[in-house]
Length: 251
Image 1 (cartoon, one colour):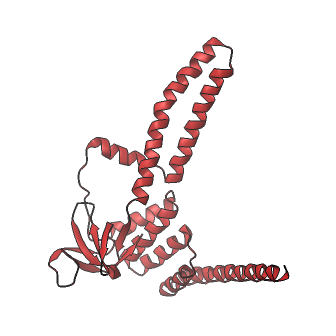
Image 2 (cartoon, one colour):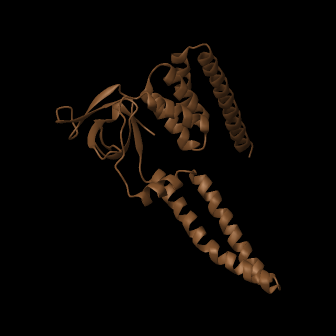
Image 3 (cartoon, one colour):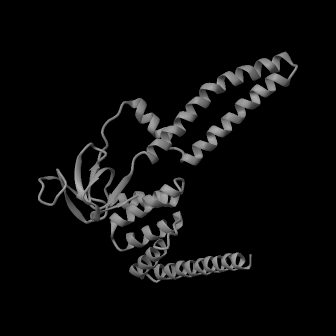
């Protein structure tokens, strides 16, 4: 028992020391950024990431540091990483928009039927957690309507609660489908951002393969299959090609 207690004590002390060390490094990085030592700030933030510590604030600050260095690809990458953890943060959304506005390539997505454009637009209005909260809210309202229908003795109130429950069924189904759509969009497909200033995408994996098209830093794309350190990418406009894994970062 004494040995177990000692082991637990050592683990707690190490975790506490590690947390203190990380907090101190975050302060150092913030001071470096404040003093316009952006390369130093990047170096410290990446050292923190190497400790398997991540947070939307950490990615946001790292994105800002890269933006100040003029490295738009890395800025977009880390703003995207921050939004993946906190999709509703307005500051990150704004900084991502500013960074993307400075990129060279403006990829136009393939046209969709208006119903799918509307669907994607509505689904994008909340994060996964936001849609989960909406589903729970309408589920509670539905249960409340049914419960009120069962316990009230007033005919008029029973009628109102019955129709309210009936109307809530399609709404509950709709918001549930929205949540499922959001989950599928964010979890079934991996995305990446080009961090190399410019790269000629290949038709097949390999530097000697035929050229497909040219991309510049900051472009976001979906990731497909991989082969020998090469990954297939697909742009929003439908273009497909291969790039080495060393020229992009995975969101």
